[in-house]
Length: 303
Ligand code: NAP
Image 1 (cartoon, helix red, strand yellow):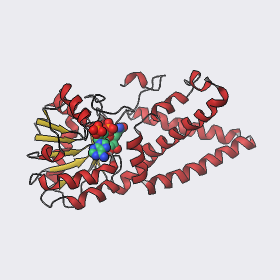
Image 2 (tube, protein in one colour; image 1 turned 60 degrees about the horizontal axis):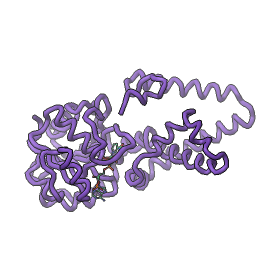
Image 3 (cartoon, protein in one colour; image 1 turned 30 degrees about the horizontal axis):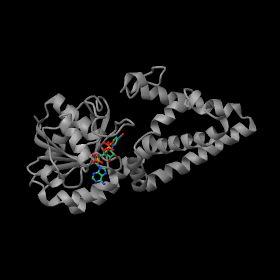
Image 4 (tube, protein in one colour; image 1 turned 120 degrees about the vertical axis):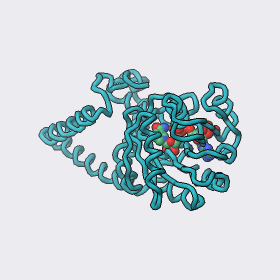
C-alpha cells in the first residue's frame, strides 16, 4: 500500500481507470471519489467504482493523503479553490490534466504551503468518457509525466512515482513548458488535424452522399476515432495550450504548403523522400513499444 486514502475528484475515464488500476495493484487503503453531477456519482456507486462516493469535493479530500484532480483543464482552478481549506497537512495533490503550465498557474495560488503539489499527466486515453469507460490496463506501459513544483520534497515525488509505476506506467519528470510543447506535437495538434479532416469530409458528404462513411476504412476511420474525443476536454486543451499549439500549427502549415507545392509541380522525389522519412518514425514508435504493428493500426490490441 502506497497511500492510505486517495481522493479522486471527477470520475471520468482517467479517474475510473485509476480506481481500477489502484485496486488491481493494492496501492491504496481506501479510494474516495466524487463528481460534479449526481448522475455520475450514482453510476459510480452502482458499479462500485470507489470504496466511498461522496457528494462534494470538500468532503472527498478530508483525511486524504493523496488528492487527484481528474476534471477538465479549465475546471482545475475552481476545484482547487474549493478544496484548498480542507486539505490535510502534508498531503500530496496532483492532477491528470493534458496541459501543465496553465493548470499550475490556475491551481498553485490556491494551495496552502503545507501540501505538496506535484502536477502530472498520464499519456494514455481513449475517445470514451465517463465513469463506465475506465479499465485497469489503460496505463500499462504508457508514460506518465510528473512536473514537481519547486520546493517539493523528493520523497513526495518518489511516492507518487511509485503509485504510477504500480498502475503499470513508466514515469518521467519534465518542466511544464517542455511538456506543453512535446504534447502539442504528439497529441494536441494531431487531434486538431483529425477534427479538421472529419469536418472537411462532413462538408464533402453533402456532395458524395454516404461514400465518406462507406469507404472510411481507407485512413479516414482513424481520424474519426480521434475526432470523437470529448469536446469539453479538447476545447480546454486548446484554450490552455495556446502558445505551443499555435507554434506547432505554424510549422505544420509550412510543411503542408511544401507538400502541396510538390504535388502541384509533380515532384515525386520530394514526396517519396518525405514519406520514407515518416515511415521510419512509425517504425520507431513500434520499436519503442508504444503501438503494435497490427494491420488494423493496433486497434484490436487495445480497448
Ligand atoms: P471525462 O471522462 O469527461 O470526465 C470528466 C470528469 O470531470 C467528470 O466526472 C465530470 O463530472 C467532471 N467535470 C467536468 N466539468 C467539470 C467542472 N466544470 N467542475 C467539476 N467537475 C467537472 O474526462 P477524462 O477523459 O477523464 O479527463 C479528465 C482529465 O484528464 C482532463 O483534464 C483531461 O485533460 C485529462 N486527460 C484525458 C485523457 C483522455 O484521453 N481522455 C488523457 C490524459 C489526460 P460529471 O461527470 O459529473 O459531468
